[in-house]
Image (tube, rainbow, N blue to C red; front, side, top):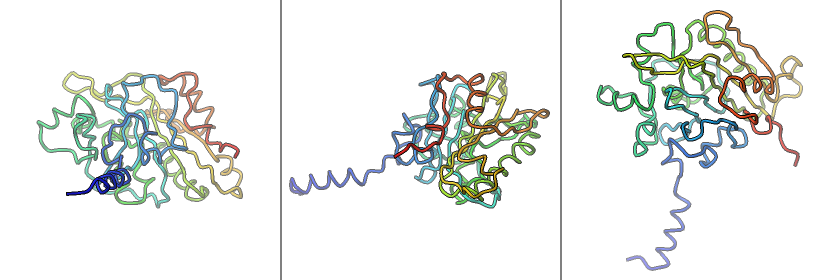
Length: 298
């Protein structure tokens, strides 16, 4: 039998040993979970989204470790954005990674870890109300599963594997995905590899005009109209060539998810925010990075 002081000591110890993210998948707020907010500049997510409680905040966890975060629209079964920290890499894409799903979108009592997509058709039915499923992408050859947090921007095998969750993908037109968008992802990878000296925070998202992939006469997955992305790297090489230095500490880009007129345009962060305000359900204070990625004077 433990004495009273032993019981008190164990109670205090358990407070320090308790790992909050071990029970977090779908969370109330990213900044309420210490290890999730590490993937967002200053731990503060984009502000101004108006859909409120209808959107789900996912701390994307694989093997009990957070990997990145996603704002998810369960009504349209699509992510609105994923936020992650860029890792220096050679741009090599993983091969034969299994696709995964988010159990807590289906039930708050489920595992907080993303799990490999099940073979059971009964499980498929249970997931369909809350998120996209593999069958939604089967008979639409014009679309591919485009990752918001791309495999090529990660280095460690588990971080790369975690990008293969269906809550991190949207239907991208095949020609856009393999052409202008892939070229931009690689351009950013090389730029951040070469000139970002500290952490680089990246947020990639979508706008939607309401078009959906339909299956069995039901609206299943929202189709992006535009893809957009922005990075924030406060600690960068001030001796970089001007044409590269101009793109720091923060810059953005957007492109039309289409077969034609789909060039990805790089723009300053304020220009990107203005562009998105007319296409997202956000308020006038919409901001992608806290203080536009400008460090406060100390």
